[in-house]
Structures are given as C-alpha cells and as structure tokens.
Image 1 (spheres, rainbow, N blue to C red):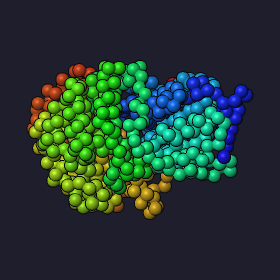
Image 2 (image 1 turned 90 degrees about the horizontal axis):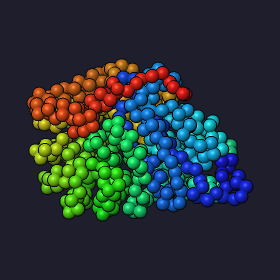
Image 3 (image 1 turned 90 degrees about the vertical axis):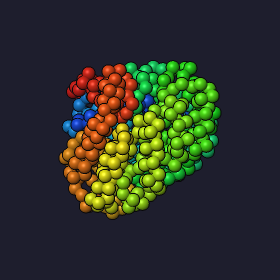
Image 4 (image 1 turned 180 degrees about the horizontal axis):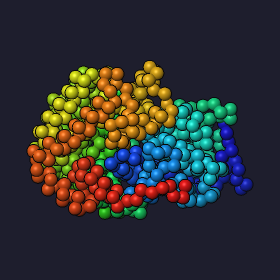
Amino acid sequence: MNNKHLAGANAPNGPKEKKDMKVFLVRPSIMVHRRALDFGAAPSLGLAYLAGYIQKHGYTSTIIDSAAEGLGHIQNWELSEEFNRHGITPAETIAKIPEDVDVIGVNAMMTSEWPMTRELIQRLRAAFPNALLVAGGEHITALSEFSLEQCPELDALALGEGEETFYELLEAHRKGKDFSSIPGLAFQNDDGEYVSTGRRARIRDIDEIPWPLWTIDYLKKFWDSGRSNGVSSKRDVPFLVSRGCPYQCTFCTNTQMWTNRYILRSVDDTIAEIQYYIDEFKITGVQLFDLTAVIKKKWILEFCQQLKDKNIKIRWSLPTGTRSEALDVETLTMLRDTGCKYIGYAPESGSERSLKAIKKKIDLVSLTRSVMQAKDLGFVTRCNLIIGFPHETRKDIYQTLRYAFKVAAKGVDEVWVSIIMPLPGTELFNDLRKRGEIEVNDEFLFHLARLNHAFSLSNMLTHNPHVSSFELCVYKFFTIYACYLIGYILYPSRIVRTVRNLMSGTNADSFFEHRLLNILHRKKATTSAPGNY
C-alpha cells in the first residue's frame, strides 16, 4: 500500500504528540436541484460523534461544515446547469484549513451528492498533498470501490460505523505505521488495486461512545438561520437514542451501513445528554433521527418517566418515520405529557402486496390505529409513503394513494409521497444492478439527486416497467398537494397554526411549515454565480 502520507514516518523527530496533530473534519456543501423548493440542513451528527470519540482518546479536531458556513446561500455550480450549491465553495472551504494539516476526514453520506463531494475531495488533495485524506459515510460504505476509482486522491475509506476505525487510522498515521491490517478500511494498494480489510464488528455498548462534540458557535449557525431537517423549536439539536435497525426493508441502506443489529442506549445516558445540552446550550428541543427510535415499549416508557421525574421541559419529536408496535395509547400519552409534539409514521405503502414484496413487516391496520390515536391525543402526525417499486402495478399504486387520502381526511397533518430511490447498498439497488438496469455513473447519481430534490415532471428516471416516470411524478405531486389541501379545508385551525408559526420565523409544527419557512428564508438568500471557486 501507499505510505507517502504517514506522518510519523516523515517526521524528523519521531511521531507527533496527539495534541499536536491537526485533524480537520469536513462536510461538503449540499447539492440541490435548481427546482428544489426546500434546501434544509441539520448539524452533522456523524462528524460530531467522530470529533467526540477522538477527543476522548487525546486528539483535537476542527469541524468545517461547508453547508453551515453558507446556510441560505445558493450558488450556481459551474460543473452543472441543473444543480446549485448550498453552502460555500471548495476554495472557501480550503481557506479554512491550515497548510500543515495532518489529517482531513470527509463526510460522504449521500450518493445523490457524490459529484459535489468528489469535486471537494479532488480540490482538497491538490491543496494539501501531504495530508492523510480519508472519507466515510453511507455512500462510501455502499460504493467503496467505485468511490476509490473516481477519487484515487483518497488514501483510505472508513466503512460502516466509523469511530473506532478512524481513531486507529489516526494512531497508525501518527506513528508512521502501515494501516492495512486495521479492520473497516478500504484503499488502493501501490498497484492501484482495490483492497478491503473487511467490516469491523459493531460497537456493542454504545453508552461507551462519547456524546457528539457540539460547539455553541456551530449550533447557532443553524438556529439563527432557522434551518433544520425536521420540525423546528428555535434551539433544537439532532439526537440519537439507538444505532441500527433489526428489520430488512429492501429499499433501506441500514443493513449495508449498520448491519441488522439494533442497539439502544441506556435511558440514564440519554437523559444525561439531554440535560447537558439544556445546561450548556440552553436547547429547547431535540429531534430523534434514529432509523427506528421506538421499538421497545419498556425503554420509551422509562425514558418518558425520567423526563417527568427530572422535570425536563423540552419539545421533542420523531420526524424520520418510526414503527408503531409500541405506540399504543399508554405510550402515546406518556410521549405527549413529556413534550413530544410530532410523530412521523412509516407505513410506506397502502398495498399489502407491496408491503410483502419490500419486506416491510407491519400490520397496516394496527399502524393506522396508532396514527389515529396519536391524532386524538393532539400530536401533529405524518405518514411517509413510497410509490413506483419495480413490481408495482397501477392497482398497487392506487391502493397507496387511496390510503393517503384516507388518512389525510381522518386528520393526519402530513402525507408525503416519494418515488422509490434505488439507493446503493439496498437490496433493491443490488437486484436492479444485477439485471443490468443500473449502471453506476454520473447520470445515475444525478438521477438520484433529481428524485431527492426536484419538483419537476420531466427528466426523471424510474425503474417501474408498468407505469411511466411522468405518471409517477403526477401521482406524487398531486397527492402531496391534495392531502395538504384536504387537511386545511377539513381542519381550518391548522391555518391559524401555520400563520402563527410563519410569523414567528423559527417555530414549525410540521415539515410543511418548515418548508414554507425555508422558502421565506430563500427569498432573502442570494442565488449567485460561483464565487471564489
């Protein structure tokens, strides 16, 4: 393997002290479609966890979040006429890193944003030829060989859960040792051949993982701009109570990234972290971004009881789409009484045939009952649905759309319909790739980005042989807007709530309200030609 970036081997006086190592963790700008209505952003949990872990082991680091540094600033991207950059340019990012940096870690989560991430990596290598350049995240884990082929500038990739791998890589780099035996890595050897050291075993006791290393200056960038990826409460933070998911939905990247081991933190550790944020940062809310936050009823009840016992007054939410088995009236009442205001459910489909095909092991009747119970208890609720799976006929899709209108009429605040995205690392992606329907190249990456961002009826590529891409887009947008219209007509009190929140400029009780706030912020933002590129 290539040892040219091993610091210890090149240091005249032996390895540096840990405290003297200059480690920078970088998140690229966000790649957004020019027709996107929403360009939300949240603080990077991944980089904050990484920073906290290596700090525990004696290293200091600096997070450069290119999106956070330019929140609300949309720039034309000179490499594409279709997509913009949300955040600062590569040159502006590079200017924040010292010339003698030792290690640069790049967060590469979204395959749909890989073209912009790739550009930044290439620019970082050109600017810092002697630094160890590492990348990690869901995209890297799912397409590691492809990523190295496109970015041979990278010295190593951290696959899956990255804290232990990145720390051991830092140690090897500092001491000038070969890192080819560190589990959880991929790299190119001296002959340019792809090498993987295999996946690292998951961390079993996640209470031992240090809390995310936030700084008030970093968080305030989001609070002051009103940016979030969920519902907002002025001073909220993203939060995790677990890692992984025990289920195997065919469209989800969990198995590739985390395996199917589901690990919960202890309630004590979770409550202590929330209390720390209240004391240190004066937060007003937390948003649980877990893949599956609520599975064990005993855990969630104990969590709520401790919030009560310790008189912790915060607003919290479950925005990403959770399961419903543990969300009965008893549990929902406890959630409501401890400040939970918003619950996102993930039925995914109204077709029993589709639910079986995508391995979504839910009882749709029971889930719907839980949604209605949540509405009766005063929650703002959301249902996430997906259409366009390769097996689906119009009958399957109509069943899903009928379910959407049904729950909207019954009071569900938000019904969001997505067209299926064949994300790398999923069973769906692997099947389509084996059948020759997917070739991983830039056009595929831009296709994912369009599905992720664009409000457009054209230039979409889907993988359903029964229904055209145009027709799927019509179903998607018509259903989303119709469900919001149904809600505001049948439940006019929502109009008052939405107007109140828009006037506040920061609070949002729903994703829709948050999108409206983002649009208002966007009108104040500038869309410009590329700056200092």
